[in-house]
Length: 211
Image (cartoon, rainbow, N blue to C red; front, side, top):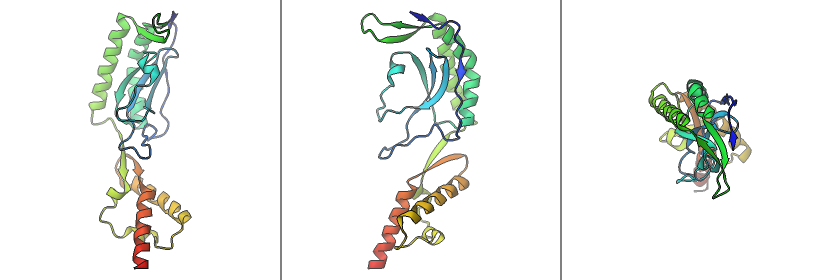
């Protein structure tokens, strides 16, 4: 058995505003996020689940209890860091009553909580739930370019996009559009499908030019 006595919770701060947002190409939605407490290292962190879904497989370290995790929305960096500061005391109580052991049947290394730690974890989960239900808990939103510019026929002219636009020019235009979307949208947003939307506009321009 490896006791975690003497371990101190260390907050791993989220640095970029939209760091927790991840939308893999070809997936219908962004990855779910969670707040995690690593019982081996004392690391308290927020992250997205890297596994493809839905349904989303539980990361093995969480499945084995070495990391305790609770679901959160895709919070902004400021909100995630504020949440971790608020639950740090409860996280320390969880860590103080935890141990890492080898399961005799499976030989897996697992994380266990004593009664006090289990109660503290329940309190931490309740705190997270209340925090995330608060309207002031800022979240990151993915905005699809095709939806954002739906019905806007002026975008090609604004960008100077036409049938002869080269791929390199389209890349530069995509960066400009992403900047505009971030500036025009409220809160922290991640522009999605911008390059694909510009590709479609160029294809339409080429179809008209060859008609």
